[in-house]
Image 1 (cartoon, helix red, strand yellow):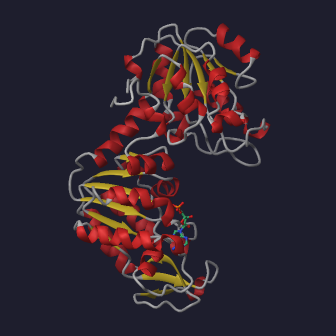
Image 2 (cartoon, helix red, strand yellow; image 1 turned 135 degrees about the vertical axis):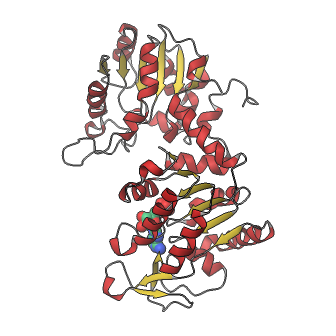
Image 3 (cartoon, protein in one colour; image 1 turned 30 degrees about the horizontal axis):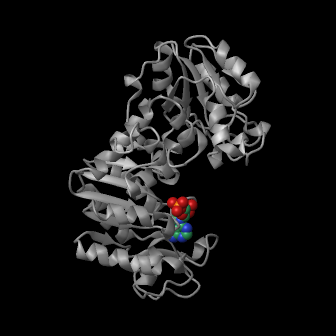
Length: 398
Ligand code: AMP
């Protein structure tokens, strides 16, 4: 895979795929958090310095293949104008004659921001005709949209196959460099912490990380499927019946390969998220039938924090409990704090875990916070992504 720096971009019309899928305020349409815009500025500035003619493109929200003015990239174009001294033109469309004219008229170092790629169903369908239209008048392709690289969409997979010169932007390179450190000879002990609701989503990553990690700490709703798989009665806790046998396989695999797979030793339980006056700390099964596990308990917090503090490499995805409700947020906060104070290379992926470290005020103490939750999970599960494969000149290339 080539880097942006290996490409000859001077005076070339370059298609830059970025992930500017920023959260917008419902009422005003204002950008709530511009992290994703800030994250691609190094690549944009480099392309400006190289005097490339930049055609930038992103998706935003879920317009379901139709034009939707509420999901226009207009606020993003405005924010780019504030952050860059170069000219930023917002195209009226994604493809078509008007857009082609703007591409041809683009000056060196200027940016033409296309409208939301997902206004066309061809984007998600990786439709070859749509990819051809995106490739029109394009001489080089740069992918800096790490957060979208797990999607085999037209702008990620179809388009680069039509462009001779292609490479990875600085953000994409940085993300891969950091994630690679976790899977290629991580410094031990390597502690992986996985939480969240749905175990089924996390099975591929658990499987792969069990071959790399020294210990895996499980929390959140998904712990209860593991407990059920071990024959415990978990009351009304969240369980995924379809994943019981794979959970048993994972427990066996960990035991055979001497990876510590830890489950919570105590729990905060309540009949529902609203019944906070009835919260109990329980250590043993069976849970009363109406009770559900909603956070890890105090002993588990202590146990997991100790494991984390002795780690040299850490990966975390997924909250330890329903952290959106303050009464069930403590487990997640303790994990965030423990990772921040560990003398380790630490990587956090996934919106909820990123929100938790922000809430805990410890973002500065984390080695790498990934800009793509889904993409980082998929990379750690399969060690490649569709968007990375599409950047390779030959299928056996690194
Ligand atoms: P995921 O997208 O699978 O990482 O799940 C994140 C969600 O899991 C968050 O919204 C949490 O509220 C939820 N969650 C965490 N722990 C539990 C639990 N014990 N029971 C139900 N939901 C949970």
